[in-house]
Structures are given as structure tokens and as C-alpha cells.
View: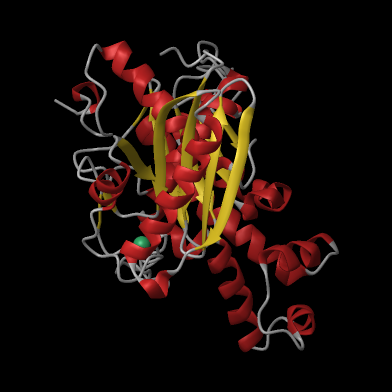
Length: 360
Ligand SMILES: [Zn+2]
């Protein structure tokens, strides 16, 4: 079934540690309807999957009279093993270690389901409907700055999975060897240097050291600071808030410089709430790219080796799609798989099984 056919629809699910979002989607209209539910973590994974499947059946019942279902896509926090669709110690889903998300969903729904990490789906959405489409590129690397730092990589039109579905974990590249401890067990990962959580922690450390009177005043009477509050303070001229953003931009620039040197893609996208303060991050970010990546220096827009690049040079930009990117990506996943399966003449199967994605 061609994705352009207006009679088809897909169901996408964004499984988060706090909320479940389930949407019905058509390529010509977009999201037709959506359901939001709390994620009942205390009830355990079986109960949460029951909730997800009940909402999926509700949307199928609503739209199957007028449309044909083309597939169900699920975005899950990682680490997610593919093609097995099994979770391994997901920090945002406590109690789900070893849970066979894919098998449990297919058992209930009695149909094929596609699962993918939520960061990969945000990258897929940005590739299909956001900057990837606008700039006409076939490859991109996306970092999503939120509670952690998610990463998804699209290479030549396909999501990169690596051997076990765990490729694209750039959030756990080491940026500062002696930096703060990360949930993955390492120290100084990009995630603990450039996420929204890291940004707030850096401000809290400055306040605790007695070095940031403006931030101490901002926090006065509040349980905690927010990245948004710090951005407002930075725009109003608070030097410590500006410094926290500059350091975040620097960490991001160090990470992106490595990615640019390795991948040489036409587009790197930074998404998530923190990326909305792009102007505060950009100066130190681009300083680091110029300093640390000779590939960037050669291929930035207008430079010597940029002429043949589809986007006019190595583009590093804030995401076009907002907080719906993960849910949209889940809706797009069945269409993406059917398109790539047709392109490779391989049978439609779970993600990660397409032989053309695997390195020789
Ligand atoms: Zn880490």
C-alpha cells in the first residue's frame, strides 16, 4: 500500500515514563485523533501494555470503517534491543528490565507491531516532515535535549540501528572525563553536560557555592529551577545564567564536533526543550565546532568543500518539529518500514532485520 494513499492510517504510541500518548495518523491530514493517559508504572509493564492496547483498539474502531490500517508503531525509552523488541534496564521505566515489549504487544493485538527507540523516532519525524524534508537531505543526526540526551541517526533514508538496535547513543559519549556521574555508569557523558537536567544541576551547583546571587534570587522560594526560567534570566542579562547556557553549548559543540568528524552528514538537528533557547547555546557551540572539527571547518555553508552538499554545507540547526516529534515518528514508523522494505525488496519485518542496514 503506497504511503500517499489517503485511505490508509497508522497508529503511533509514545511510551513515556510519565505519560502515554496514542494517535491515529494519515499522511495527507496528519494526526486524526489522539489519546493521552498516565503511565501506570506502579501497576507494572503488563498493565501499561494493557492500557496501550485498549487505546489502540479504540482508535482502530474509530477509523477502520473509513480507512485501512497500515500498521502500529511504538516509541519506547531505551536501551531497546532490536529486532527482539526487549528493554534492558530502561532508566525511565523502572521495573521493565528484560520486558519483551514487542512480543507482549503483538500477543494482545494479534498483528505485527513495529517498535523503535523514542530518540530514533524523533529523528525519523524530523527527517520525514521537518528539516530533512525542507533541506532535501537523505541523512541526518539528531540530538534531543530533555531529561537526558537522546540520539537518532538516519543514513541514506534509513534509521541506523547497529548490530543490536543500540546504535546512536551519542548522549553517552564522554565529554568531560572527570565530569558528573551518568545514569549509564560513565562520568561526564554528553547527557550529564548538555541535557535540561544537567543545565539545572549546573545552576544549582553555582548557587550552592555561593557564586551566583542572581540565580539564588531566582530560585528563592522555589523547589527547583527550570531550564526555561534560566533562559529567561540569561536573556535579562544574568551573567551566571548566560554562563550555564554557554557551557551547555560548549558541551554540545564538543559532542557534535566528534559526530561531524565521524559521520560527515549534511544535517545535525538539536531538538528538545533546551534547543528552543538556541540563541543562548549557539555562540559557544559553533566556537567548538570551528575549533575541534576540521570537517566542519571545511564543509560549513560557504566553505571550500561545501559546494556538493545537498543542504549547501554541513548544517547544524534547531529542530523544526516540537514536542510532538516522538509521537509523529511512531505514526510514521510503519510507513517508513514498508517503504524501505519495498526499496530493498525485503519482506516487511521488525526494525533491525533489514540486511542492508547491517555493516559487512
Ligand atoms: Zn552516560
